[in-house]
Length: 200
Image 1 (cartoon, rainbow, N blue to C red):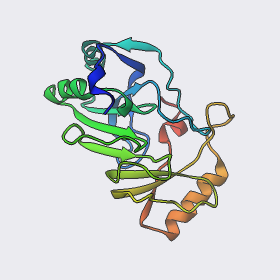
Image 2: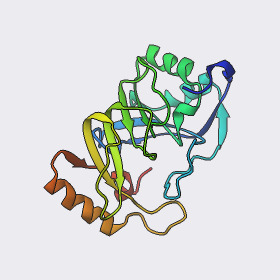
Image 3: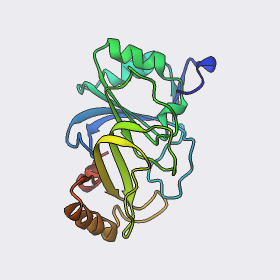
Image 4: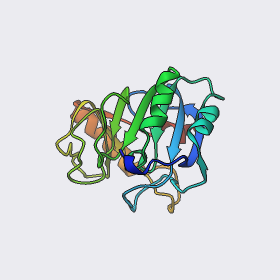
């Protein structure tokens, strides 16, 4: 997870905030997000701002997170696993947090650090082959591809407008995903509930 030979005393962070989980298995759960900056991919459809807004030490991140009451922490990005997070996450473990990670699956996930792993693959041959939930972005007409990943739960999510596009959702993609899961119940539907509710 990142280059452990180049441990840094600070981490590039885009945002730290508390909200409800708006996607996947834990939709509706109060959580605290740490959105790390930067990504190892550059997807044209990305709808997430993962620019570097500040650099924080582990102590500063913990202090910020403890301002919120949620005891489930979601580590996301960008791609969070490009950073050397082991020491930081061990601090949160000792503090009693349940830790989830959202990753694109291009970097091996070390054992013992995460309580829940969500993979949303953006490449055809991801490194990660096992997770708790697989979330596949789908355009109207696409057949969801598991990309060789074994998961406890399989979700499809309609591809929505990127940062440079107007609007919150693509109606055609949403309708297609609804129809698809009705015909293919192995899959579940995941929408970005936070966008519908107008919250972060």
